[in-house]
Length: 578
Image (cartoon, rainbow, N blue to C red; front, side):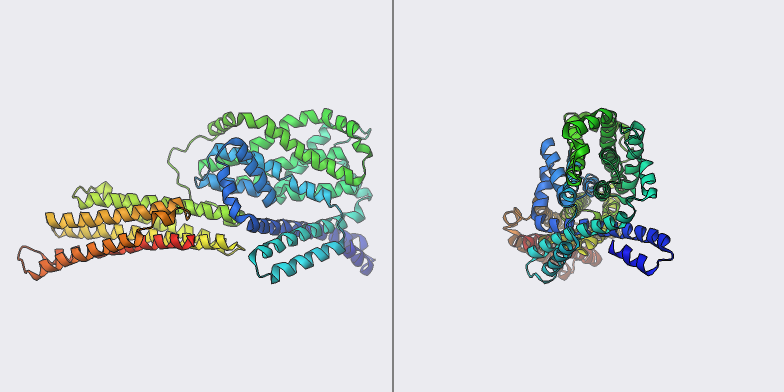
């Protein structure tokens, strides 16, 4: 408001045009500050609740009520149902969550997103002095606190101050024109109250459309709800109009999930469709009841005589009531709803693999994003074990073209996966992360790199045997037995460290208690095999091809490197547990 006054005083000749420009500038600026504040609160709350976020995600897989509670709590923390739904799409994409579990979390997310409306309703007019004080103190705590916990607490209150600052900006932009003829004309175009004071069904439809479009553009129902509450506070729109706008906002907020699901696997698109259908069907059920429900609410609660502050709580109450009623309607029918979604979007004809490149790590909670990367590295571990098992068939003399092609294909796939994991985690680590999440991300980078190296060693082993075959060389029975024994030791070792990785840092120390002694045993076997081959060369047996012995020595060295790669994975797990 003070900005508009300054502009008008300096340029009185062209006051109307400049005021209009300043209104738009302050609205956009205030909206931007509001969204930035929400982002800061989200990062701060995630930092404080980081260790518990993984527990919340795991709880979503137990039962439908736990899934709804998870969606509600996570969305209340993140302050955006759109972001929660994007996270759910990502978790379905990476296989962390099933479609049915995702639907439960999405239902809860719609309840959690109403927290912002209550926050804005509770503090509609904080005052610029209090806002500046809050931002100043929070910034000092964030910048100068030595403990990470207090830094994130400072970030929370900094975001809260920015939210209030953004609301103050938008309120200041709209105040000078709130009672103007143009503003009244514009608001009357989509008012849900007719000229005679009765509820207008056609006006409600227009409000739903406006709320949906505005929220789809901003991609935040919290922001559009804040704007609606500002308009109610200034008297520009009435309760009926605000309540109808809320219905449209619930539809518009689903656009973000579809943007996240573009090009994603089938289950991810199903999750996005579930979010859309849940809100659209809810609006279709509730909208016909509004012409009867809202006038009854106005008469029963005296909404038409409420003060501005009380009216804001009424609008927030409608937002929450809509989502609670919608939840009660849908919750008993989640399984049939999931069945309907799978019929609308059937399974793909070709098996789809999750890819981190389809996800935007900056739109996900860091803990959840790191968990998605962990799931992808877990897939790498399974592929490596299958690759090692396939090479044993080659070692036994049971090789086929299909087996060899599968080994080489797995090596290429693991190269791609390692690159995706590195890129994904690199983007996450560029943000403000809690120390435990950052350490886990670094561990995953290291483990992904080692699994890619394991696949390289197996592919290199196969190349050595192809080389022997092309030179018409064969292993002796004794040589084959020695290599099979070494192979089985390495395979068991790889299985142990992979199981430790999949179990996590809680169980890794127990599973890897004998890791170094097992590695020493493999090293002893490598030395014995190498000694045997060198003895064969020293004997000058004319039946022995020196080139074959050299190749076998290269094979033995590759097994040594494979053991070292697995040992590095185990050490990375033990380092994380400390």
